[in-house]
Image 1 (tube, one colour):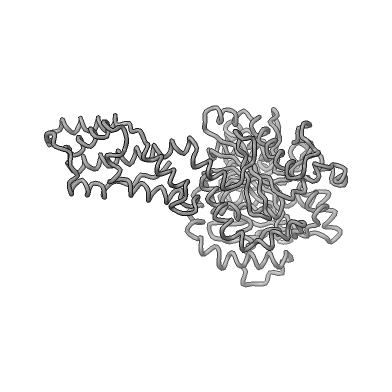
Image 2 (cartoon, rainbow, N blue to C red):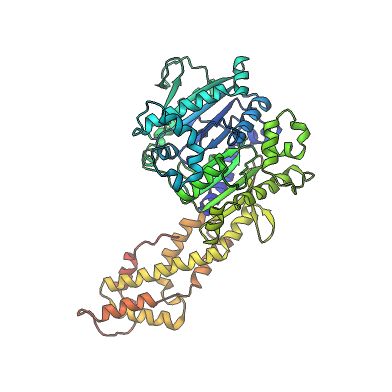
Length: 543
């Protein structure tokens, strides 16, 4: 999946970034979002797509189930977000957005969730207790989801800071139930105590931001129809390959700079892209998301992504300047080791913070087990939104390297060589199998003999090389500038160096030779039948 992310960032730099460059450079001076958007970590939910919002519009937090916890043990992350959004940014509205087919809500229907996902179960316990004591049909996922949305909406309105801004006439709070498979949004009416369908063709009298209304209308009328098939398929489940931890900052839009489709990236967002270190019995949205990502979704890559001009890091560098934000200050101090160099420049401190959060993530037993079993990779990124550049930490160099350098290193890595060799091995095996399937035993035997004698794919490259090069370009070409790029030339050269393991092919030959239809050995020759076999060779996808 990491290669796909690198492709996305490169594509973003070459296209969408150029269209947004002027806006992003202006946003260096600061963010002024009108909305705090609270939603689930689910990969199928893309708020910037749903609201058709450009960077700088949505300050955001995401957790498992879109919860607004109220107890002291689990509320600090949300308290910090609310404090920063209201006191620091003066947002005018909060959108709480639950969604259809929510895995967290489905978890509430499972009796043994405490055994399989204990951190997630602890995080959802308050919701479960509320639903258990209500008249909700627990067999209905829709009813459970709506009951949870109402509970979070009520808790949000009851939050002391939120209530203060509402009473002052400076804030409005809304709750949505988003059905991604249909593109429909239902809004909760506290007066009617029911959810009503939002229809962009009608005037509802809803007081949320005009720009947000226009964006939602645009999504439903134009963007959803373009991706309707994808959204409907995602109703069967999400299978993201990466867990992305990033900041709430409105200028950071992962769906944009990753060029990721709905369903590809599981995301949590909070102040400073932080993950509390592991503690026995802790309850936090971040611990629940990490557990859900690894155990339920079986994700193989985690990315912690800091960013330029980060207000949280400015506050961390000088806690005196955020004395008026005590919850933010507590959140930052709780998740930052004392050894962190506060005198570093803000970009350096931001990079150091991503490494601190990587260390926090690695303190979790499940993460340690996955890393030891080579089932998980954890990456630190730094996103400079004004430049459209992503810097990736490389442990061997102890440095963050720019995108192109990172791509070069990835394509020339041992991991890539292994993938290329496995790919070529499959293509050779498929070619020989096709010969056997078309009853060309003599050609197959002689070809395998030549391959054993030379110890390389040279004897067969003229017949599989074109197809190999085409498929390699299809998979990795977007990471290169053109087909003559030295990085792609290296991939082809590496493919030709493949040392073949012909044991399985030899076994098939021997089995075929014992069959009644087997013919004797003949001289090796490339006949029209062999060429036909080449064309029939099955397509082998890259790892």
